[in-house]
Amino acid sequence: MRALQTVTLLVATLGTGLMAGLFAAFAYAVMPGLARSGDRSFVRAMQHINRAILNGWFLLPFLLPMPLLILATVLSWNGHGRVALAWILAALVLYLAGFFVTSGVNVPLNNALDKADTEDDGRVRAARAVFEGRWVTWNIVRAVLHTAAFGVLAWALFVHGTAGQA
Image 1: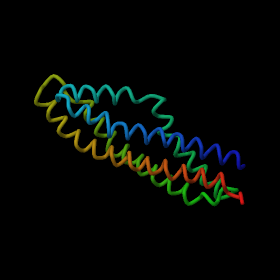
Image 2 (image 1 turned 90 degrees about the vertical axis):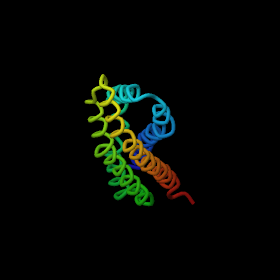
Image 3 (image 1 turned 135 degrees about the vertical axis):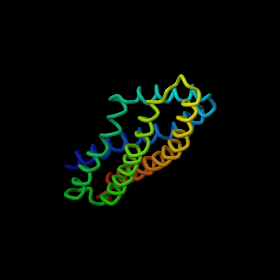
Image 4 (image 1 turned 180 degrees about the vertical axis):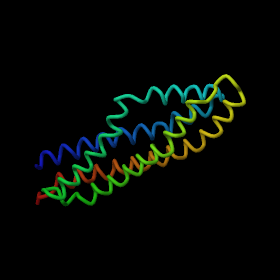
């Protein structure tokens, strides 16, 4: 049971860290870089990124931490790692908040931008104006939420690992 708890926490921590890193990289490198581009280049680049990211390499670390955190909660509640339970629950809440930001704000913005006409200058400019500021703001929010979840999970893993050692 303890080994399963440890592996569950470790894999959830890794997935959460990958998502925190991805969203943070968009916040401090990708979006500031794209902000320097023209409207058409910006819109086309984001359309290509948003289409390319929908793959198993993204979806696995994005979706897997949720059931793993639920399993880690159950295992912690019933098993050896109860000392880490509060940290696991905090990570689950933070991760779910980031997930809902992504699915409730960023994905709908991505979907709307995907339909933008990239041949008409006025429409491209309008699509960027509707998309960029809001997407960047909410990406920072989800980056912070996932980074906090990663930190809390790292601490939960530490607490779980040191439980019972005196």
